[in-house]
Picture 1 (cartoon, rainbow, N blue to C red):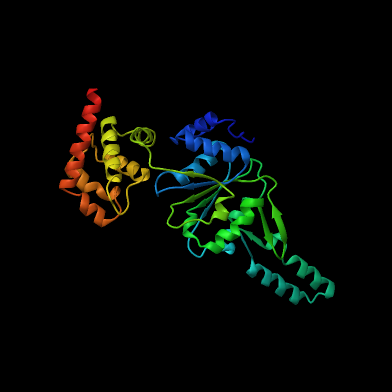
Picture 2 (cartoon, rainbow, N blue to C red):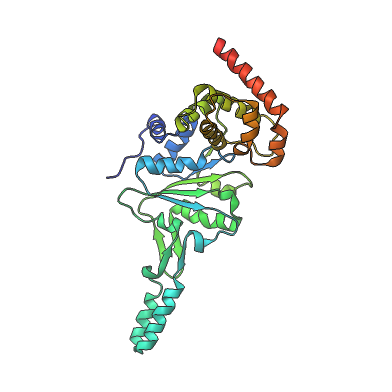
Amino acid sequence: MTIPLPASVDDTLALLTRGDYVADRSLATALYLALKLKRPLFLEGEAGVGKTEIAKVLSATLGRRLLRLQCYEGLDASSAVYEWNYARQMMEIRLAEATAGGASDRDALAADLFSERFLVKRPLLQALEPDPAGPPVLLIDELDRTDEPFEAYLLEILSDFQVSIPEYGTIRAPEPPIVILTSNRTREIHDALKRRCFYHWVDYPSAAREREIVAVKAPRADARLAAQVVGFVQSLRGLDLYKAPGVAETLDWAQALVELNQLELEPSVINDTLGTLLKYQDDIARIQGSEAARILSQVKTELAATTAR
């Protein structure tokens, strides 16, 4: 049974909530329009803000298969779209030679060598196949890690949801897959590809929304601890760090502190656990010690003032 797509922005928000994803209305609107108009959704933002998680939530809540293409430098069609099973083709050729068939057998073999049974389907081609549960969710993750030739190859797929295979023909999707593309903006994506997508910038959440995320994803964290963790992380994002912590790091840190039986932040615990929050030694060295104590004092003062109102 195919689960229907959300019928409104409110339904989209509810769907994300069912998947334990705390989204703002602008993101839900972009996602609803992409689903409704059957267009790819291009999500850009800093690492760790929850872009990839959206595809996972859609797959889980809609009961659709998730096909993930993790991008990297040098990614090509043989890894992303298709390739021919050359070993099996050679085996068929040798078997045909051993049986010493006539000209008609050789012609039949030549025609069969590039049939579907020799075609190795990679994620992009699999996404074009029909599925009883409905079109799959295709996640093209960290597109900025690939190079421009692969971007160009994607244009046909994202425009017409089809793949042209010279030896075989054109394969078209009976119904477009749900396509989510993500980028951490380590380089600019070409305008030609962006034009084929709806676009949304996924920003760091506000303090209030990040506390909601921690409450959903790290429910064992004491409310006071969660508020201090979020306040501390929000303060770090205002500094000129090499890599500011994302929401993923906030959750990692909150869960680590729970395992250490912490009910609130303390300078010594911050110094001991900064490696779960910051991933570069220069950033850790800058924050450890007096700077961590200063930020924590400021956070506690602000929270106490908010509570007193």
